[in-house]
Length: 186
Image (cartoon, rainbow, N blue to C red; front, side, top):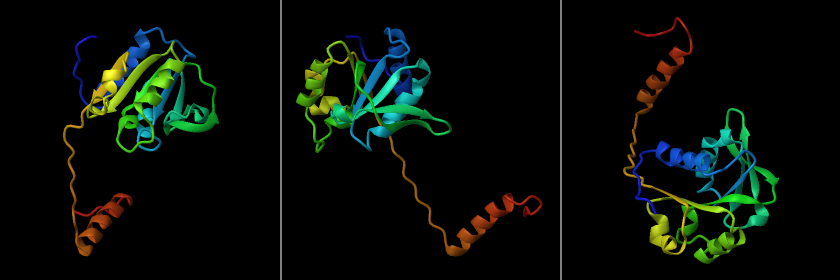
């Protein structure tokens, strides 16, 4: 096992993922399957899928570990990658386990993950999580990941701003003026 390498931000998640697929004999047409929690994992899966769209891989989303509900991930012009309604048969070269699966209250277990890994012994196992979720849930001890990306949300800044109705009106008028050439105020 190699020593962890620190990265930052969204590129710190996407670049190692892409590099792994590019340098480990994945070729156009190979299937990679993302297993995750519908809703909470889906946006991250679509982001990962977008990062590797040029590799020509067949990308698939499986809600939880329900492989009979496997859906193809497709590129939609001016939107990005989207989970489609089209179900597909599975023949994965990589299993990508999302950390949401290991969160408390999610209706799956580490045993469910192990069953999937055993079912697809030829596939690499990748883990992508936030805030050491696989470590916290005990999955790191029992599952050997060919690649593990564990991102940290370091700081979350939340700001609110209140305006009076008069201030809001003036604010919106300034926007309106921008849309009408020759009406700019000084």
